[in-house]
Image 1 (cartoon, rainbow, N blue to C red):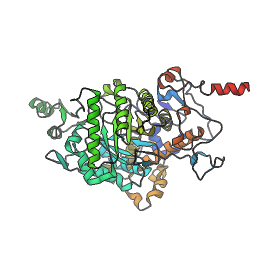
Image 2 (tube, rainbow, N blue to C red):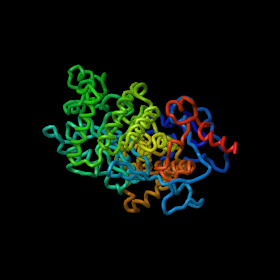
Image 3 (cartoon, helix red, strand yellow):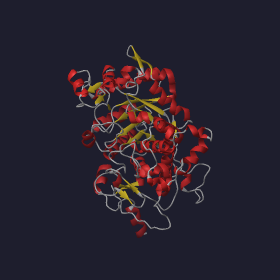
Image 4 (cartoon, rainbow, N blue to C red):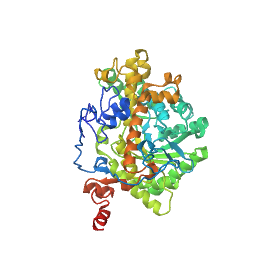
Length: 543
């Protein structure tokens, strides 16, 4: 990936990944990668900068290796599919703003979304807690699902656990309530549970307090790591609190030698780890039995919508996830490939473990199709893992069509929350601490964007129209930034879909993408770029 993109005027502070994001994304970053700049300029980032004074051409002519960047989107020069009933296939109606990006997922109860997009799991990491209002309000306004990740209750000092069961969970309540306040029927609040959450009775607490307003998600893993979730804490007393809560804390804060090392500054932080699941099971049949019992228990509690999150394990685990989720009639299965990650995952584990996203996603389609051919109603699927742009969305939807309904993005949706909070803190110093802003003043680069929220954010007035002038004072700038970035993703997706003559997300097919090299063709089963329609071309020439 390029570190600088002169056409868009973007630059990566750190090492750029396939997603276009830096490998290390800082909350205090002054910019300006494509996602960062999209968070204030919105759909302007779909086009080359300095219109009227430039011409621009693509340098992306070489595709090496197997990745989403080695898939290309196929365009067509006639036809139109998926127009809304009230519209015709006339040239006046077949325009990209008329492309519907709405979608839905679910087995019997359908959850509608305004875009085929959802957040990754934002759990007990402190950065998720600090910027939650921006994330949740932004997602609710856009109309997409947001996921409360694992361990939120367990790490909350104010939560109360009596006799092994939660009786008060103020941080979890804050997160759910923040989203539901602006939820208008599109999207969903999804709460994830792991081993510790299950032991603490998170599911029972949620169903008693929120009923069917919440989707419950079981967790098998994520693309960033193959062990339990981690966070770092700097205070030894808090580390001891977490150990007493039943977590694994490394190093052990209760040991005298560790306390002495901490006192002298040799140890400055502690890592809190979660437990692995299914460690007492040794066969596929045992895992299936345990999983089905868990789902049955949750349904008896009253959960009508249940999802599963799995990571980049091998092919056996992938097949288990798709088959078990299908048999259990779950509402969603998120398949998260290596390359994703929003938390404090061990770095070399992120670099070296698991199946890269495109390979995992290609096999997920293959296994889903096998079940469908046997007559199964395959579980709705979300693909995630290092996806950040509208072209990634289109390619992943096409690669997994018709089973994939949503694209899961982690850091790409968090970046606008950081940026908006920094802008709010710089423009309103009295709110800096409340919004966790990192800037004392706007960077010099902001002179071209303006010095007020109304001018900086291309989406400001759209948000104001949605919530009303009076309510606008309660909308954090991070949420406005998420709206603005999502608007760019939506418009870009609409344009790509219009070019493929698909005016509804349900019409996207695998034939809408092509492989740019033979290795990608072999691994994804997506035909090579000049092989697609080649027979039709010869028929035309020989007619």
